Image 1 (cartoon, rainbow, N blue to C red):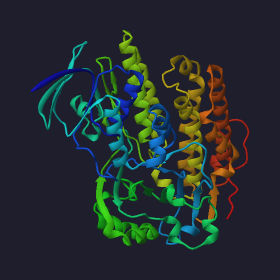
Image 2 (image 1 turned 30 degrees about the vertical axis):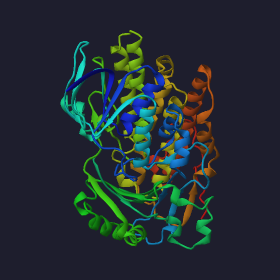
Image 3 (image 1 turned 180 degrees about the horizontal axis):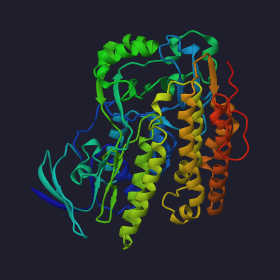
Image 4 (image 1 turned 135 degrees about the vertical axis):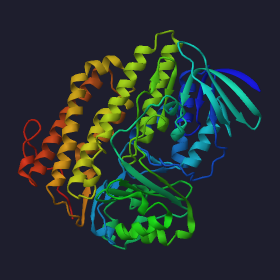
Length: 526
């Protein structure tokens, strides 16, 4: 049995753990890091892991924080945004309401083949001098208290080992080694289920019709590169292309509205799609012989009582929390948690008392988590509403780009002075988001929202594209404060416009949330 000592031992070498290791190496080049991953590398391409679609924070984290832009551009697919079709029960998707961009927005995001990506991350970790052990199974661990060293026992092809660690970092995914040990799991009130599978073939939504007008609405005419959401009351289904040539398919449902038992194997899921999304079901059935795998997950969303400890342990990724795949926030919250962990280790290395930092960073993380959870919790019933959900998506994007993205892109997640100064504006934005999510539920309850042939082009909203493009603007201390204040005022205006639009459906919704009402956002072109 070998015995070693390391500054950090990371339990889990999947996406969260390997990214954390690379971020630590970039920040602290002399740091001794051991990563333990139970799966053997290389993983197969199109590895069966949920979380292929990234949005702006996750993509920026991979591109810039970790320095992986060349790999992202060459090995994965540049995403054509998130796209939504209100096609429940419809065979003619091209004749339904479509929400999305007509052209690719400036800030990149990607469709990630998790097998290709995690193989690359493992190789990159070793290239950067990180001790990455694949095929390593954790057999037990002891969490030190009051400054004591942590110990981990594991076994790999070379036998049994004991590793001491100043920092014990749990990135073990749903195995949740520390969360389970300390009984930290929290029910967050969002109850949904998912099934997903991979097909070893391209599922090209652009080929589902020969309607030239429909195809010509977007440039380039490549909707297949989007994360395509096919919407219905209480559910959505996804189509995500992978760099290996495979396609990821999933169905995500409100647990009370669409029981998992009706889709828990491939044949049941295919029959369900034939009934609810027949065009999608037909496309999958035509390639059924290429099925690569199938998985389901019940009640996937969860929180944790604690993420960061003054005893020098921390949780990241699904080992700590998981929200919902609807807006693809998984890699975003990996980026946020990892950034706080790296900052804590930096304070520890500088000889500071980390207890207050652990407290504040955890409080900030859970504030971002709860604000984002509000976008999903109790919202699935309105997902098939072709009037309300497009308005909600516009609001949710504006809130995300206007506040959280600004903090990440400007490297201000740990800037406690800024966050303290901006607390009134940030709390106003949070309260406004809570009220808007309630508005969307009331608006949906008022009825309406039938799908019809139209394109709701987000690029037609000048401010929307400008908000996206502004994410990479270099801002100094005064500039970031001005930007956040301007964006909160923008959110006030959007809230007014959407409240006015909702009031057309129900007089109870007409009172604006702030200021003077503005015109509805969309004048859709059929």
